[in-house]
Image 1 (spheres, one colour):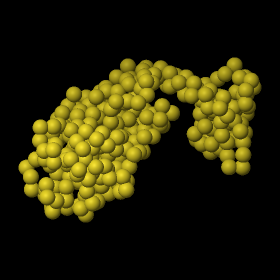
Image 2 (cartoon, rainbow, N blue to C red; image 1 turned 135 degrees about the vertical axis):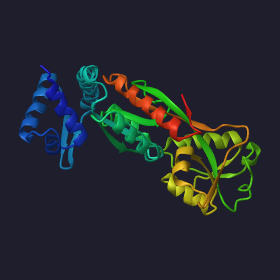
Image 3 (cartoon, rainbow, N blue to C red; image 1 turned 90 degrees about the vertical axis):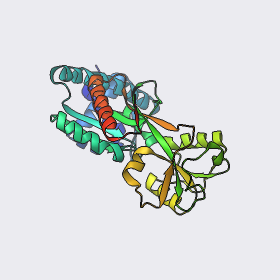
Image 4 (cartoon, one colour; image 1 turned 120 degrees about the vertical axis):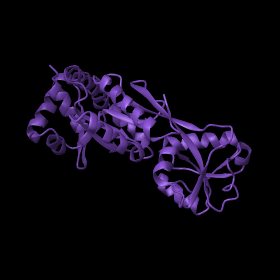
Length: 305
């Protein structure tokens, strides 16, 4: 008979790729974990892992079973979370994943508000590569993520929070820098810098360039919004930057200026995403409401939804 403990051991081995490290994560001895793993293989009648000098890798069958085991563990945790949430509200530990183009500029305000209103909540924030966030959510690394919508997986549900404007950033000596606003026609042929393809922002900017006839510069991709701003300031091209970043990092003395597009609102949709199987959906919706309240108070140009 398959037990939850055996499934927990399987998932730990998958994440650690090593029996000893997996045992340490579960605070058990390696022989005990190995025995649980072997019992699971015997119960299922299949080989779940291949061992080598470099570590342990799950077999194709093992990976599929691990995927299903994750759902079982999510449902089990969901039962406990639902009971805890129904009893106590927004309390306990929640692991929030965030993309680097959002987290640093919004979450300090949100965390402060949550601490004031829910002192028994422990919100652990972890930044991650944008393209990895949803995969990590599915694997249980995060409970909920702050990211650009829509969600990529049908196993996840997204709660829209706000629309965030994108503004055109230019070097101070750029010919368009003195304009009150930038017409769409002025973008034709304009060289546009952007972050690397691991960011969702890359896809959006590439689409904007195609729509407006701008030239996407692929030779110099920023590894962060800071790097992008510096390249713009050096006159290497223009860039679309998100409003939250501009509020936080660009001042009247900065090496770049930011401009709105005339007659065309360019925004990205931002929301919270969690697994459909999560038992704490109501807690995540409460966090969403607090984020909206913070945004309304702090940022005039963000459109709350």
